[in-house]
Image (cartoon, rainbow, N blue to C red):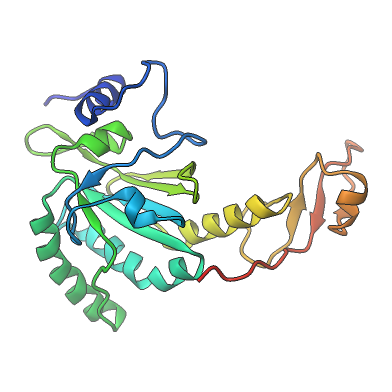
Length: 252
């Protein structure tokens, strides 16, 4: 079986997409701008930027159509769509199968969710058809340990979360046998939207409404506005201060 090294995958992706980048410039990392692309999809030919508009956005890839875990994931993403919309987030899927295959697959997803979730959840968000593997290669959405019968690495279960300025704020990557947790995706979005507007951070296992942590560099009167509680530690260093979770308005 033929395997591409990560550096070879990245070079192929940049070349295939016509992206001109210095060889040392990483693509798809935190803090970098998500590149736009235009592909056929379940909603016709469209671009990522058009789908996301001026909202936060989630792009998630999956290995292949008509596969069990992917079917559960895309159905769950549709079930959670109201929660994404409430947060002002647009979502889109991607795989390397053609759009016509995606459209046929939607019928199975609808039937599966009706049987298992008690209500049909047919995806209304676009699922991009990256048939030339250009986007998957460019963004490193490839699992070199999971290959097709022809020995070609398949797309990983990767998630990109971008802000309204199209800056990549979070990436998650799951192996083929592990389905994504959309509660975690929402939790991360809640944290990022909150910490973008407030000078706080969210601790381990944090959920919306729970106490947050004041950033160490916030001092004096600015810190007092958050009414923090200092946790005394053996080191004597005053760096861990908790504060009540601020309330943000719905973005829906």
